Image 1 (cartoon, one colour):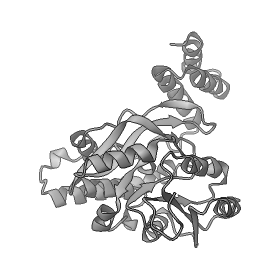
Image 2: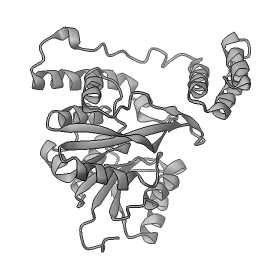
Image 3: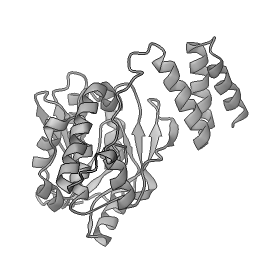
Image 4: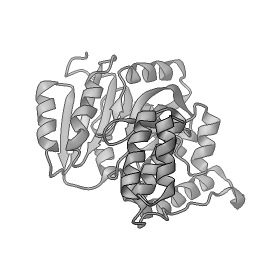
Length: 310
């Protein structure tokens, strides 16, 4: 562990807004990393719940935890505030509701040192539900730069933002996040990074991404369509791509106001869990979907299949 006055190897940037439910588990997963030479910078974006108290407890317990409290201004401002406070040679991201597996930092640093042409490394991701039960691995998180860049230009989720690590010098080159493109400030940054170097995802699951109704990618659905369209248009312009047939169709979340949305989501999670092999979680969501829509044959079909285990 580095001395508090000397720069750490890694600076971890974690924005937090009313994140008390999962915050302790998220921080513990960082403090338990096998590579311990880091600082954890948590930007409390004006939380009104127990988040400040939880952060104070961790900061008093471990000198690697630094807390910056700001007036609520959104994730873009919080991220850039955190970046401005970093001192490490590498910058890692983390969110207050996810879990980093113990060897994440060790393996990401090793990869970046072995591949100096790489400007960002993410990792394979297991999605978990609000209770922490396994859902499924994200199938769009692929290892090669070419495939990642192609998916990004298609507007798809090729890199999981809180699972990334970037060399500090690279982050300084691109100038941080574009606050005008929230909630796709990460997607825009990935596109810009892919224009100056190689992108990669480690093929091993080293991160657990929690899915729940408060995820910003769901809460800000309408704004996302407009911002993502702008981010990809900007990338086309920077790269001199004039073939508009290559531009993806960015669709809104058409089920956002559907009163049966929760049941549909539970069924979708249940089927995806069965495909992945998370049978116990599939059964949990099958029973929930039956309770939510007892007259819907699709709910009973999922329950039958989950009880059989396939």
